[in-house]
Image (cartoon, rainbow, N blue to C red; front, side, top):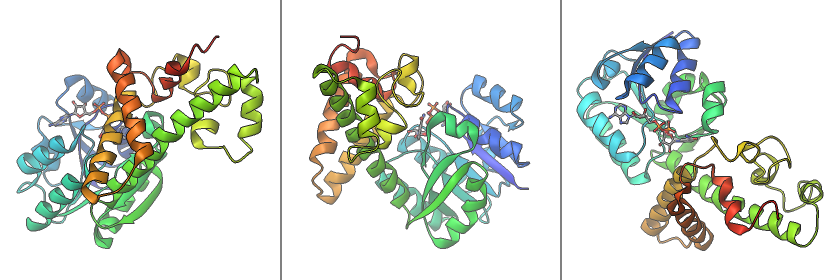
Length: 295
Ligand code: NAD
């Protein structure tokens, strides 16, 4: 078992660090929040009072932070020059591709190996240890990161060079944002036309309109498997985070001269929904903008 530094113990990082501790790793954990630190302690981690102390002597330094600026700052101030050159730096946050590549290059210049390893699966999967990791980095970086990621997830996939993990994540979430809105539209249209939503689910879930948004995360309450819709759209994947990921996708599209009309429109719709005071609701709640669910 290894000594692991874990920085960022929020909704996702808290469960991920706890799973590493459960697997027997020595998890030196840091967060700016005292509450997060005390939860990590209860989960079997060893709380430390700075990111640098978490990085010190670790075989793997894992970050799960809000955005690229946090990752870059933590790496510059608390990891570079402190982490052992034998350590692998694993950033699991969802951040912009440009920053992911820049921090990996900066790490390499310091003799360190870094990979981007964003996740799919949400808070429930972070707690259950069943995340999917999409990893960008060298083969050596991937091989060294893999055992730690396997202790927190069900699938660990090498996407390619540094930054491609983030590319996979934002392309996946752009697809998710667009299919969720399309699924909401189809359910509301079916309902308005007098078709029972459960009947539409029974048909479309085994027809060509099927998608994860429908069969694993149905936006209508009491239709399909249990989802945030059955809990007043609380918990799940926040609209604000979906909007963040769509904006990252649009920035990448602009940088590479790619046309993403559906992604762009999905971002506009999510922006309007978030601005209406709904940023904290699960992203499937966007169905409410299409009409009265009880009507
Ligand atoms: P969160 O806000 O709950 O957690 C972030 C944590 O980082 C907080 O506890 C905060 O105190 C800490 N932090 C911020 N700056 C820090 C610093 N300088 N040093 C130490 N700690 C610091 O966010 P989250 O939901 O855990 O998401 C983390 C990342 O995972 C984000 O990039 C998000 O987009 C991504 N993600 C989230 C989900 C989800 O469902 N929540 C799913 C997939 C990916």
